[in-house]
Image (tube, rainbow, N blue to C red; front, side, top):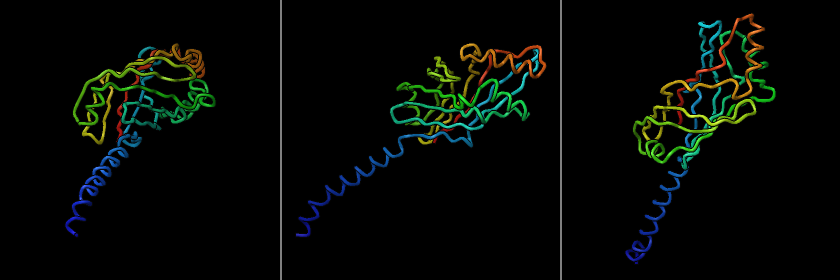
Length: 198
């Protein structure tokens, strides 16, 4: 009788183990951005040939199992190494009282998603939409992707060039130039990033 009982329960036990494994994989299917290990910066060019690197220090993001990616930039976290300049950028350029967050959304290709899940290295173009300063525009980033199946590193192969006019930032840049007493500030902004998701 015990032997008969074991025959009945063994398949059920195996089924329970299999289901448990599937649920475990499902629970780990989403990747979250690790802000402490990630970085995003952009370069400001002023007076023709003076370049400075600025940072957005608070990032959030996630990638789901279907390849939907969302990255959020907290524009209040701008760091330029000069406090008054940080304040002016929040107020006059980003207008963070109205537009605190910039959001990038993208749908990854099956090739990119397979590399992430199985592990590997891939150079890829990621096409997405950037919602910034109340406007949405398509954007493409050339990235190098490395994954071991659990942790993802996505780095820009080359800077993504953001045009100030595309997001209604021209007047804000002109205001910053006036306040700082500069002859000019560039309206084309190169953005680079290293993003870690786990």
